[in-house]
Image (cartoon, rainbow, N blue to C red; front, side, top):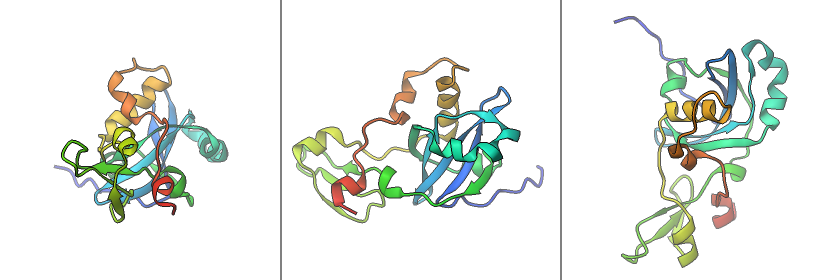
Amino acid sequence: MGNRQRAATPRDGDIFTIPLGDGRVSVGQVISSFHTAYYIVVRNFAARVDELPSRLPEALGAEPVLAGLTFDALIGHGHWKVVDNRPVDGKKYLPAYKTGTAEMGNCMIEDFKGEVWRPATAVEAEIIPFRENTAPIRFEKAMKAHMGLEPWNDSYERIRVGDVVTSADIFGW
């Protein structure tokens, strides 16, 4: 066993690279954490690593294409490299989640942090997802597929950015 040192724990606002395997990287950002998971957004952007410092504003302005909760394994072991930290508006990204089920009469809507909750309306019970974690390697593979470097797998759909009901939408914060 080697003395491989673990990178620092990710912080809100950390900007990291995702290697695409063709000499380019994509860019993601940690939006917030929930227990041992991190909500990340990955942008529709790719550049060579040496170009990234001058293109970081462009990267951060690119449309988000993937988002979700994941773990810090690839950041923690240095495969995804933290390159900067910038403030981020969690209100814009952090989803609301549901717990329980409408069939059992206990469907609740909670904010991203699980600190504020209330009974779900029938529509909310239909459209708001349960909280799910996705392995970081799935984000990497999905980004490679998005860039046309690997075949698209239907399992990537659940992390593709779509119409997200945010905690701010539901709870007004």
